[in-house]
Amino acid sequence: MKEQLLDNTSGVFATSPDKQAGASDLKELRAKIGQQALGIDFLAGALGRIGDASAKR
Image 1 (cartoon, rainbow, N blue to C red):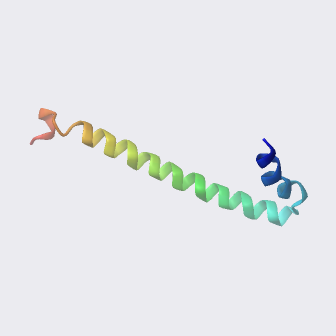
Image 2: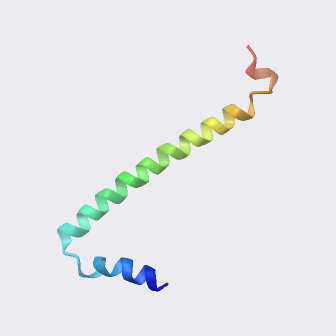
C-alpha cells in the first residue's frame, strides 16, 4: 500500500504535459499487451488442436 502511494505521488504534482506523456505511454503499452494476448490465445488454440484430427490435412 505504501509502495503504491510512493509510486503515484509524482502523478499528483505532474503538470499537464507530463500527464499527457504518461497517457500516451500507457496507451502504447495497453496496445502491446492486447497484441500479445491475441498471439497467446491464437497459439494456445493451435497447440490444443495438434492432436485433433482436423489439424491433420
